[in-house]
Image 1 (cartoon, rainbow, N blue to C red):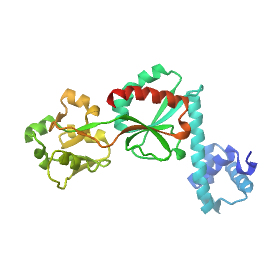
Image 2 (cartoon, one colour; image 1 turned 30 degrees about the vertical axis):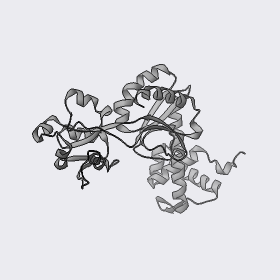
Image 3 (tube, rainbow, N blue to C red; image 1 turned 45 degrees about the vertical axis):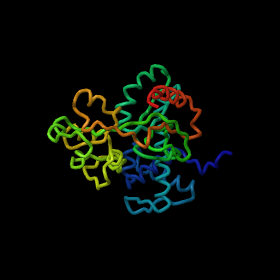
Image 4 (cartoon, rainbow, N blue to C red; image 1 turned 90 degrees about the vertical axis):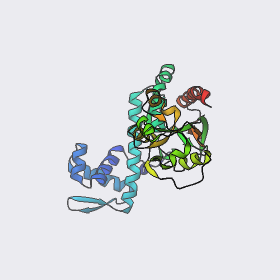
Length: 298
């Protein structure tokens, strides 16, 4: 059923409203849109007449949103952003085949990026757009086709495929290891430990696996593996890091195993996608490819 015209205002009316709502000024909106002030005022008035709702409080040269206008502005701004993004994607790849993929920063830069040329060479019609997401999000609210997720396979409203497990090791700079003579788990009880906010109990689990009694573990906090790894390279402490993400540092000697006792993480990496996108061709091609790439690691 086609929506009544009053519920589908033209983009020119919506753009004028959004600019005035964001800047709080008809003059600023007119300057941004390369229109006259009177033209912007007419467009906003036309929108209000169409909706039969006032959207602004008007005070001399300035305007401010009323309660209904604030809600409408949020919704319209998001809709205009989605239209702009869709137009940009279409221009970048007129034949379609765009995959919007959410990635974890370190996994994306260290594992995925070096392998993507192989995927793109195999599927030349597909364009991949990468965005960073560190935790769960609502697929219905974002124009994202799939995500690489670390955690448990329980993403609401989505399908999940296991990519790989990981083993973490206590890693630090060679100087720190030599200076403190680390060799066994109990040596790390007094070491400066580096923690990830997304895995606050990782060190506790590692010490428990090592057979040491429970104790309070303290140290610096980081929100990403990359910064924790750089801090370890700089000699700030010992970090529990996935071996497959620090191969370069281990091979070049920037990092060493403080204690050679790896631990299998209780969580894993997954590819996640909403049910309604399961058959989307670019996603299906990427899913087949990445599951083949990670098969040895499963």
